[in-house]
Image (tube, rainbow over all chains, first blue to last red; front, side, top):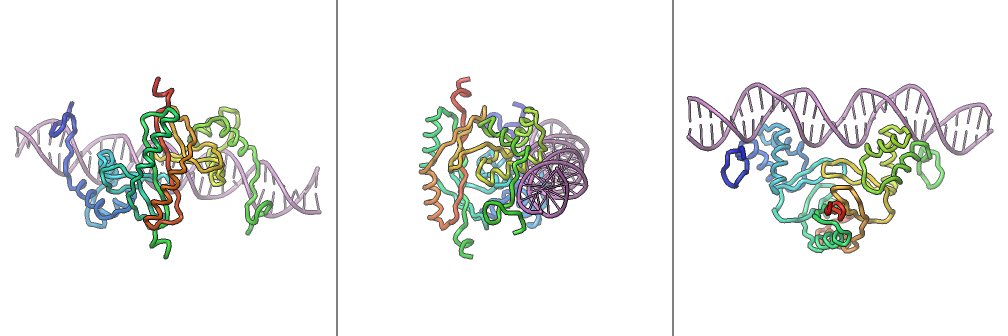
Length: 139
Length: 139
DNA sequence: AGCGAGACTGAGAACCGTTGTCAAACCGAC
DNA sequence: GTCGGTTTGACAACGGTTCTCAGTCTCGCT
């Protein structure tokens, strides 16, 4: 334990800096998935100035804390968005990026069952559904 | 239509070269997911010599043709393996990479239903399950 | 067998998202 | 105000992937 303590027993201090506030504000400004660079641009357009490395650092921290979801596009790029704390999956529009959080208890159970059948333990899973949302497909 | 035709109406010719055979042979030599670079190394170790760019090109082509599966690690790296032609998902061991193809008709249906409920069309989905396989967790 | 058109390849450069570096700025406690 | 640790930003470095392009190879046609 080498850090100044404040709440729990070994949690390094996390300071509420201008930069972290700017990233948090940016995350509140959209509800689809955005890349780190897009978020960085958004912050700039809002008049703030935050280094790209800091945006990455902050997003990673928030993701570790479970406050944002990170997933990967088909191309391998990381995209992020604020999320609810509970376990869920996403329905993402390919065209406009609109995102709906969905739950799939049946899927969770299926994953556990299938894994157990094959002797796998410590299960985690990724599940994302992509499609074209109503307004994009009628356009 | 600018290409020489042979089978269907606009399919560009695909030639069975030494390099493509080497990649195909390498794919037959393992049944877990490997990165393009690992596959490239494997080919070298087998005595063949194929450029890395060619490995990437061939894997992409095979993936488009549905003959190999490509998925992304948590870090965004593409990994590949030969697959059966039918739609399926994977149960992958985090430790040793051992992979089991699994089917989840209930999941497919769940995805379709959820998507329809939210007005999404042209659905596709990704679902992978990660865990620790029996031999790795007892070790 | 020989030829021509076009597909294919490899070496290396380019690309691009992401992470590491490190000195300077900052925050909070005293 | 002062001090120590945290945070930051400019920039370099990194790693996987794609692009480039001149040289090579295949194949269909004679």
